Image (cartoon, rainbow, N blue to C red; front, top):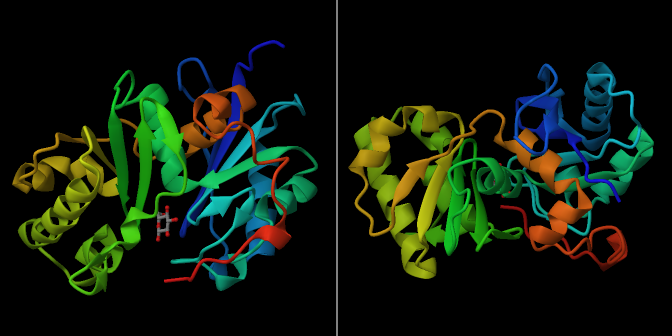
Length: 277
Ligand code: BGC
């Protein structure tokens, strides 16, 4: 089998859907980045249509080029099991099969923070790091990825741990800072509680902070007092694209700990929807 050189990565978010062709050896984008707004309501069929448009615009001739798609929900065996900040129609949906049918090609569907964490492991702040790395993305919600000795342990939903009776992301996500117009200092106090709780539960070796706000890391990371080193992500806007593309390749998935199970094990009928929060 020849090693795959390129893969398409698509990152589906609350406001935009973006995609590009990625060089899997270097983590560089080898096409323009195509971005379209997420359709209002974020319903599955509309998102599938927009994704199809993006794949067409990328005009990748080779139909065998792997396609990875990341999405802000728990994704197990190709089925989306939660919907914290998206349409509830995604809960229990066989999303991977739906996209495969619409795009008429194999795709691999993963959680957005897992994709971002894997991108940092392959091409960014966690490259070559052993031990436990916890990636967190601070955006509308808080996404998280656990990576141990370079192996991704998928679907850690650490944005939803309960802190002082609240779903953590409702207080500490970047959207909470914006919604409540919090100063960096006030927001950092909430982040302190959040990262201290995660640090206590997991004793990681490294925290990586991603999401758009991480470009302003110097405003809030120095205010945090943790045992664990905490660094900004290297890939902010493109992390989802890079990780989804890398995880689309079967060999990479095996390395990442998924052992290629998505296609052959589990059906939508097995899936137990997780409570939406
Ligand atoms: C979702 C996660 C997602 C994160 C970032 C959370 O609300 O539960 O699955 O990774 O937001 O988008």
